[in-house]
Length: 169
Image 1 (tube, rainbow, N blue to C red):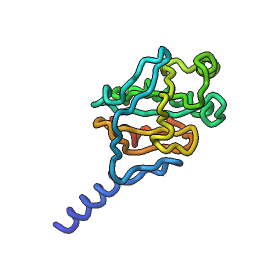
Image 2 (image 1 turned 45 degrees about the vertical axis):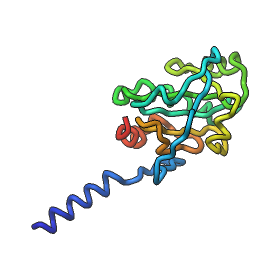
Image 3 (image 1 turned 60 degrees about the horizontal axis):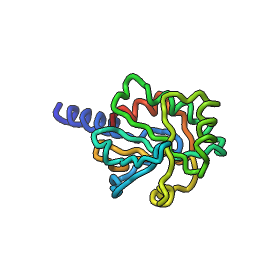
Image 4 (image 1 turned 135 degrees about the horizontal axis):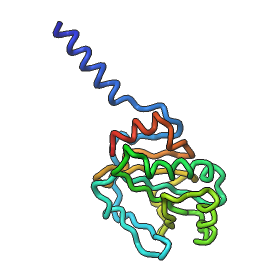
């Protein structure tokens, strides 16, 4: 009987920690810590990641010329208002050196109304995070440590993704 209980606990624990089968998702074995992560809002005001400690933070790197970015942005917009994710902050950061007007048109054309536009700072987060392309989304836990990233586009409304990300909310 003891063996059965231990076995059930082991299997339950293994299932709970199972890596979801979400395409392009890379989960860090150890959280990555970065110093002084900053980016800009549309008024060129500096936004500091450290100001969002205690929140689940997604930095989504995109550009107006990026077709996969255009494909995934509506689902990212929906994720921001998902009723089970009330502790999430999403920052879509344009790294394509696009103007505000061009970025705003991109958002308006896609009916993006739950997210604001942000821009990479002059020291380039793209370089600091070793981005290989766009879109890329980096996930930070409540301690501002990177725990995962999605390289390429995904559907942020995917139920498996929602169930996984709720663990960090």
